[in-house]
Amino acid sequence: MSIKKIVVTAMLSALIFVTTTFINIPVFPSTGGLIHFGNIFIFLIALTMDKEYSLSGAIGLTLFDLLNSYTIWAPVTFVSRFLMAYIVNKLAYKSNNIIRIIASMLIGTIVCALMYYLYESLLISNFYVALASLLSDTITLVISAFIALGLLPLVKRMLKNLDI
Image 1: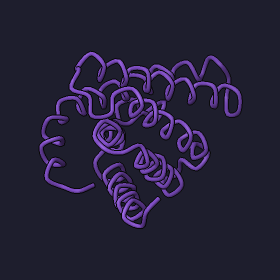
Image 2: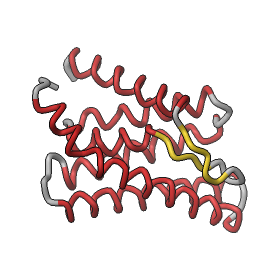
Image 3: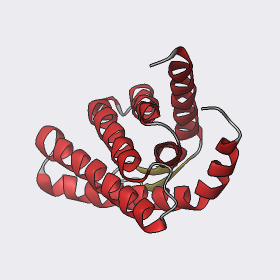
Image 4: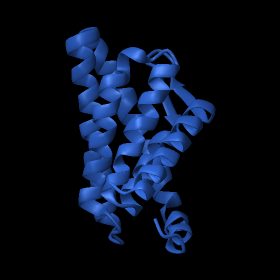
């Protein structure tokens, strides 16, 4: 990676960390489910920027976990968010096909939510408790995907004039 890509990745990671920390809506307090700009940014970055920037979501949200009492979730956050972004990027990077974009975000969401389910059911609690988290994770990720879909045209216009 070039110095420029490293710097942009660091800035995007910081943006994701800060917005996740300060702009979030708890929707499932019992499972810790949050709607936050971190996931929205992950989708937007994956759809509009080179694949190298997919790492920024993993870094930003893992930092959030480590610094906000979610430390136990940090390993799965890093891997699942990177994979989610990578999948969306591989399937729909710079695409204008709305079906392709929605399908890529749905596949990325499913992979991410299932990773959390497996991690929780195998390492933290049990399959039944993890099932409640699976539902809340899926709902929050789908809501984030639809918000990102609504913001996508604006972000594409903004990035058009930048050399990133």
